[in-house]
Length: 68
Image (cartoon, rainbow, N blue to C red):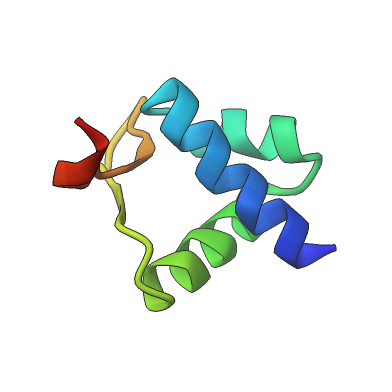
């Protein structure tokens, strides 16, 4: 179910910090393209997710001040 995967992605990124889209896809059992769609959906919903472009780049969540 997509909602479960979205929550799992947020939890993975919070726990591990940065991960490549390939690593996220392997963990979730979906394609890298699906990960990019999921990250776009999370961002549209207001989840502070960002990605770096380039080889070895990785999506991550931004820590909110309350997370410190």
